[in-house]
Length: 210
Image (tube, rainbow, N blue to C red; front, top):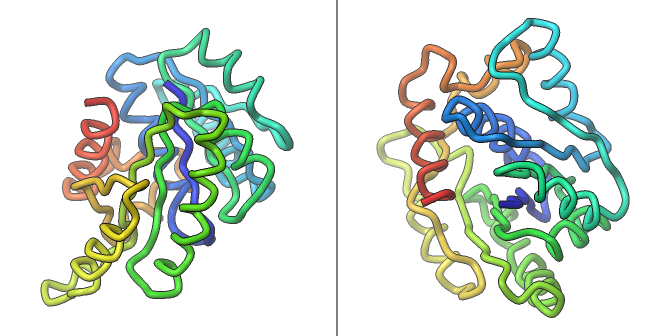
């Protein structure tokens, strides 16, 4: 399965999602490849840190810019999962990845600035489905406040419901220090000491593969 994490805005946590989902899938015994299609190379740098630290299981990461369609299809023949991290903008990498993907995971924070970008994403989905009609699109809120009285996430879920192309996930990722702490170690939160963050990633994986 080819899974692309995308958005029209940076800072939503695409690399965080891809690296953490990769670790959890690998720990479950799936074979996988990760494609870093973002010039910032966040996922690729994380993979180098993981390899240098000698963590197991190893995560295979490919860096590729430009058209990703053929690369993703070739990798899909060899691996159970191909996870794709692209830049937070309308890019050639994102558009070509969407034409090959089985699932697109649209990430957004609950701020109005982020939610406003969904209209553009919705148009990109329509275009991608002209070439890939079976593309499944899921939406997930990220970096949600852990404040017990926060209401933005509820409002954001209602906003997502206005876009029938995007199927909202039950899982949300909260703003937790653990997600930042593991990056420099080349780890995922399921290998760390924050049980709440680990449950979020496990829940996300269950939804994505279930």
